[in-house]
Image (tube, rainbow, N blue to C red; front, side):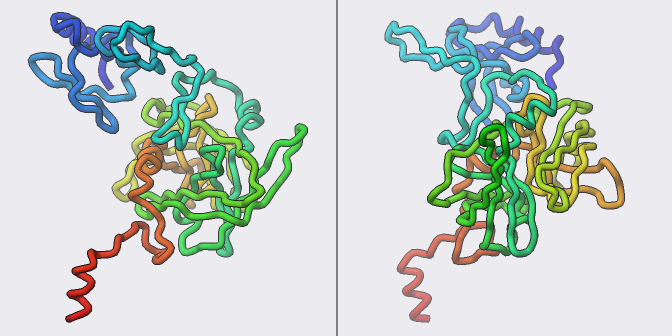
Length: 331
């Protein structure tokens, strides 16, 4: 994390640069002025004239092009004298190709009771002949996230959705569920409900796991031991727990078999992790995949496309060129 004194120093030095440079406004009321030369997954590279600095994206409040002070979520019009078009502050910001949604500004904090009422419908139960787990819907078309180990080796999948109707929950089972993409090594799977009579689904917003603070309250919704729509609350114990070479969020919210694939929410109702395991001989030792890894999986889902020709394979392999096939046949 960038410290405030350091950021202030940078902003003073950068004030000597040309006014045509970009301005990166930081969350700690400081700013860096320079030329953005690379926009990476977790950080932005900025040329400030005499050196290049790397700024973590979770420290950036907004980026201003050519000194035009515009709020985050503003679409800058071409330089034709027209007024830029500003989107409402509460409008959702879509992920790659509008596949999932994130908030342009942090929603207000609410109680667990209120949030469960608002977003609980988007949490589902995933069933296979070999067992069950949890999941959550990320768009109205019925795409949902769960763990790979929930559907591993299975092609017959059903999803139980609890639609809110007249103040009551109407349970409906969808049998036509397709596997879209899987990442076996990071335990993630993307599914799609394809039932013809499926209605528009309630979706969740994806949050920012990098912005979480240790000790922050979180809660999980899932189906531990088959007990659907179970809510457990706790705090974030650490967000950098390393297990078998991967970093996980650790939480005191109770996680049990059946919670796998379900969402871990912050108190703004945003998904910040995907619950996937616990230490069986301890209490309050649950773990979740950070939502930053899930966003990367979704943004690059074409690279993880599920192949029906080889259900056990997490990657899709293309057929070799015809000339190679011909040479192989001759041999």
